[in-house]
Length: 399
Image (cartoon, rainbow, N blue to C red; front, side, top):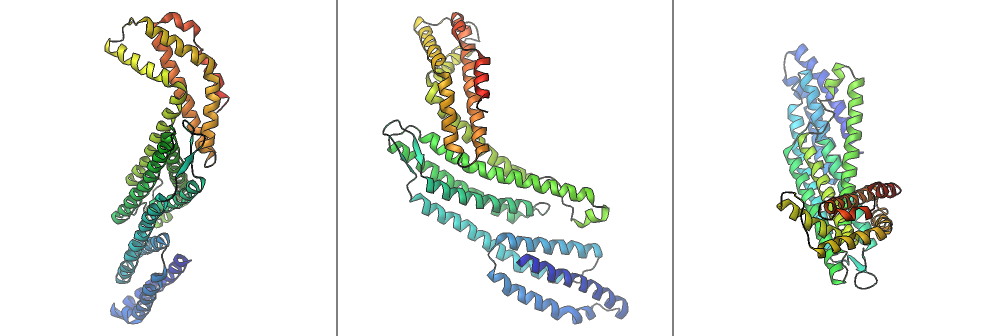
């Protein structure tokens, strides 16, 4: 690859220049002898590099070459030999503008994808009003591929910027992240609007599951990639002696603050959309219970948590909700299991399990809150309630 050839040429130049500079200064007592000896070699390499990089459009390859040049500079500093300082400055001046151009091209590619994908149909509603909205499989697959390539690029930039801390790289990552988010949010908005126009009430769930699948892919790639890198780096440091650790350029075994914030940002996006999806799905099965719990809890809070007298109408409502739940909770769990796996298993079985766990946990929490409410306002109904252990036992079958 280009970076391997670059490394080999510069490693040879590094060692040859070191021995030549030491010999020239010790034997001739003059520094300009080295320039007369090696100057044409460095000019030739610089000239070829300038022409060579014009055909390189891979930002990771360019960044690897920049990091190699940085590492070689550290080596020369430890050797206390300044003979290649000007050459390495020229290499940086050649590579950095090309890297910026390559990253700008990646950014433009994402913008072009957004313009192109927005024109496609986001999906369709099957079965008339009240039916589920299905995201177009080709669109989902296409966006999945874009997200995967974006995740790989972002992971590479994050790892290669460790202990390098280049502000312009961080700025490029921020621009790429913002553009990718705009792309996903625009498509999610289109999904929601198409569902609404098709008479489906599942537009929010469909758009949320779309975002969960894509944000989950980014989080999975970043977290697993960084963990593998940190683990490998820790093993290298543990096996190396003190001098070898120094030659690693001071690489650490954990993320810097910026990279941690970037990972946390995508984790927050993922978690918030999982929560949105869970709430929307539970409303299909528990809408009356959820509304009742929130209303009565607010009333109890205003009355300082004291036992509250409610109307016979409200007690009848609580009795009706409890009776409906007692007759439908097992079927609701089965339907939620089927729906979640239908929305996520095609992309990631791990994501499907995680979302299902969150959904069933939230169902149990809502029911627990409902039982606590009726204990305060209508304790005589508690004897007819489904026991918490029974629900937990059923939930465990689907985990």
